Length: 396
Image (cartoon, rainbow, N blue to C red; front, side, top):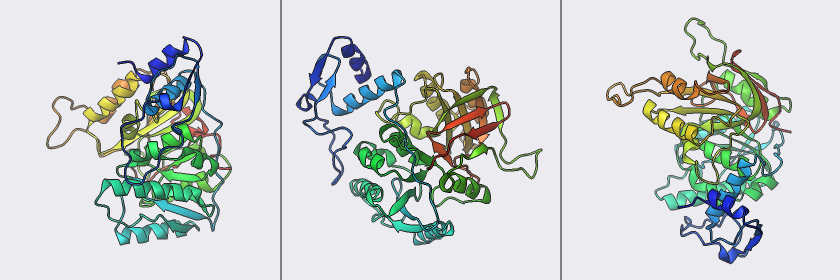
């Protein structure tokens, strides 16, 4: 079976041809509920000019082929755009694109958090509902996502929590709508899938940072404000000051020394792995890749890291930052006897032999102290000094 990307490369060598919309084999997948077709994929009668022989492809295969060829040639799809910086009084759209949140006490805490930063909350229509049907939850989550980007009153779109399910939205999002209405989009964990997809298909800088149910320590608040409210670059990013330098709470370690410069991209390892082989997979060429996870046994970490290694995602990167992996490691009571190495051993075995700088331990994921990182902006990683310097602002 020939992959879509291989087919695209093969036909590119055969001469010009035109593929009409009716020649694209329609996907057999039925959308959930009232979900509309993806505008990026295109309408059935859309005609695309290709340098290649006419070939019947599904729309999903066509997107994958085009994306793979563009990445292979190092050609960005479009110029990256930055949303406007937030200011006091701005309205923030609150959505649950992953797991629903129906607990009124948690929602009260979310509202308190938004107002604490001088912002006004605007709730998605599905927020607070307890869903019993996946069809309904996906459709409602998508409607909320689109409504917030469409609403001219809304200046930022914040995920209330992560959890599971954001990948169901990826092929249903109207990325043209997102690009034409650039707004601060914030979240982490399961929200990683949305960050990667928006970056690739809308060309918008997004922000890997706290969800609205996060702890928001003083450290987290500092980087939250710098990333979203200030038009100056964040500058130096490092871990919180330690009260006990002998036994630091957040220890950083140089896995492989060196210095690299590139645009930031990354997020949760599980979601990066999940989207591999799709039109929404991460592009790491020449970039500083940051990855983290939570609650994973080390054999699963090894599996996902090995997948990315085999896919060339590490060799093509400029540098790598491995974050903290909270609650990760072999199980205490039922250890995986086939793979009982520590997180550090697992990371070093795969990332330690790379020819690029690798830093371990920066706090940007499932930790109370959490840095907000703008995805798509230029940064410099100095693994020897254990520093990340963000050189461009994520907002305008």
